[in-house]
Length: 451
Image (cartoon, rainbow, N blue to C red; front, side, top):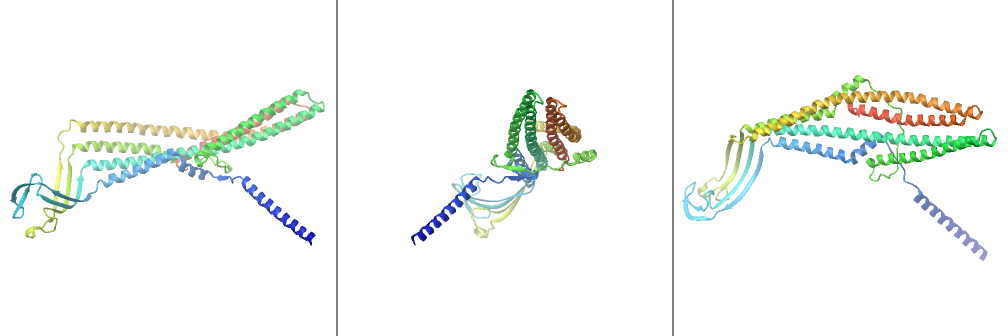
């Protein structure tokens, strides 16, 4: 019986120990498991950057503010209505005077006031008709169009930066893999030279040369890892609240083809935010000149008031006098003399308008030059990308043949090192060429408004 109790006790202790070990192992596994890396596509990276980049946020705020200014300027063209209420008491002067509707009333001490007790409760509608109001509305509309164009410029600049960082990160990671393979190649060649030295087929100088190359590849790999980490952080600053958030980018597919030159020129001439911004600035300048010249013309003010303005706050006064009524007024202010202030404002507006015209001409010239440069860069990058593909295959074949010749004793170690260096150089240039072509193609897409 005691033996059975001991067995049961041992079995229970073993189960508890196993359960504790499983729970502890699960806890350790949960603690040690790193956060899953987020896969960020290019479109997602652009969307996140638009939410986090301060310059784009400022441009967006300026565009929204300009749109509100345009609404306010248009609203100023419409009549305004207020409901005015006032109760006024004036000290009497001790005398009476005939009331407006018969009888007598106590006179106020101030001659500008109508009565000792005066109650005003009126709805008032006001409208000012003048050229300046319409010109100011045109200025606000032009400024809103300019702010929208500036927002598009900021958006395209942000997209260009994101795409450049995105493909630069991809190129940095590709270079890191290339350097890892180059280090393995250097280690393999070091092992080969050591084996051949042991077999007394080569001198120790070949081993030393191979070891120097291997050490150089280790340093290159260390720099490549650091460069990839920097590229990752630079992009993560635009994507995440914490730049240390683990993430990965999508593998780049084959580069898209280059669009025809005529199509690029036609699309860029139609949809270019720099030209739209300059045109809006010229329109705003013309409207500002009109607004300044409007000071030479009179303004017509219209007012309609309906309500009570009487000594009693009631619809009917003494003797059933009607206190509720309306009044209409029209005011025409004709400018006569302002010490040439209007002339100076007109001159100031014309100076700004002429400067805006120069900016428009300059923007058109820059667009032509930028199109020529961007398309030429894209063509050169595309051609070099094809040449580098051929060079990479040629360099790989050269390295393979040189290693075979070295193994058979027909080539010195220096030729193998040169072939390794040439192959590494071509692979690195190939990664840079992909970024160059993608960046150039992105520049064309941004100029044409297709991205």
